[in-house]
Image (tube, rainbow, N blue to C red; front, side):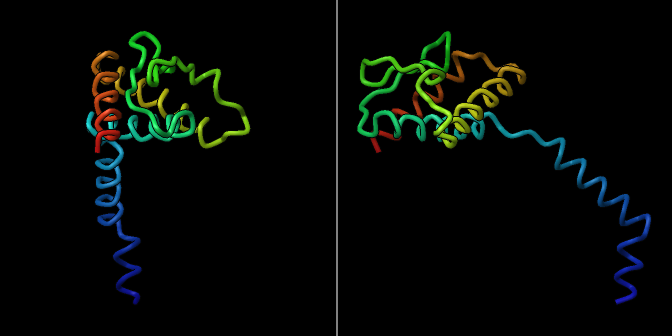
Length: 124
C-alpha cells in the first residue's frame, strides 16, 4: 500500500496525470455530436408543443423560431419559467449554435442538418 502512495504522490505521476487531463480538456466534440445534441434538445421542446408533428422547419434567421406543420412557434416566448427542462433545452440550443458558429460552421448549414435529423426522427 505504501508503494501506491509513493507512486500517487510522485512527480512523474503528477506530470502524466496533468498531460492526460490537458488532452481531455482540449478535445473538441465533433460537428456530428453538436448536431445530435441540438436535435435532442429541439425534439424535447417539440414534443411538449406538438408531439404528433409531421414536418419541422427551423427559421434560417432565428433558430428560436420553428414551424411545426405550418404553424410558427417562437420558443423564446412560448416557454415559462415553470418549465425548467424546456428552459434548459433552449439554453443548450443557444450554447450549441454559439459553439458551432465559433468553430466556423455556417448557421444555415447547422440548421439544415438539425432540421433533417428532426424530420428523419419522425419518419422512423
